[in-house]
Length: 358
Image (cartoon, rainbow, N blue to C red; front, side, top):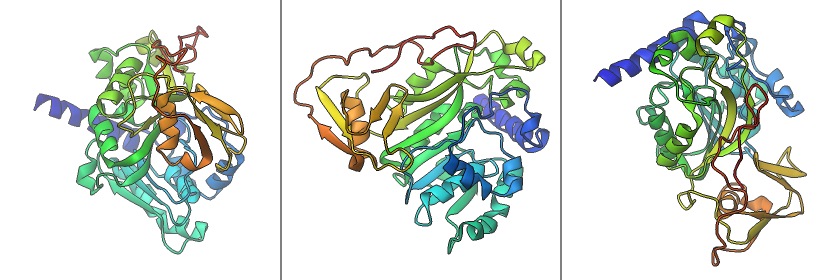
């Protein structure tokens, strides 16, 4: 009961911070929850169609944009005022669907208020967006069925949850087999002390709720996502002196991960002599496909892969775009250069942080 009360207090503090303390993204005290990526032109064009009030209430750390979305059902955990939902609604098309979940009264009200505006703006016969107010730890209370969602996205929100294990387990439950959660969030180079975790401002700034990166990897595997893949990362700068004085001794990273619901994945990258050939055809990724930070696969080139990568391409929505070489008949040991050090590319001081996966 004590833990439940504590979790509720954290959620209430976060709701107040994003619903009442912040009026727009300029009120944030660090760049932990702000974008640092260059948006492609097709995203800029989609953003032009998003209502100004929705854009003003955006507090994310960069648009999460997985590939090949047409016709898919996407769930946005912590959708806020719906900016990403309304961009994704254009990319899934009229036959797709985007569901946004947020616990904050003020934010979800903005998202719902502009559904008809965006339906007309996109020239859709009916709205392909749906918004539900609730907690990302308890998706079962929001009538989200098992195996019902193709892709889950989340933008700098899971670190704000006091029960991250429940978030990941619920994500695994609602994903279809072969589906994925593709999300940006904040991670720490070490575990955060209880004192810092109890600071409402640091928590609201996406810092003191951040998981130590290795705890995240272990939690993801425990929840069923057996091989977390880092897509991009960058070190965060804390420009506010007061905030830096409290927590500046810890390195923080904004990182995008993809976690696949593939029960056959192994805990390590094992070598079965397999390879893939990218045939092209994924919209906006015609010449090469980037699966993660260690797999940039150029069109037409034979690309050796471990067994897990082979499954991430063959047993998912990406299968039609690849040729697959090999099977699982012969095992050759661990895939070369598969390591267990910190996966992020560098700290904010520029020091290399460690190795990576295959």
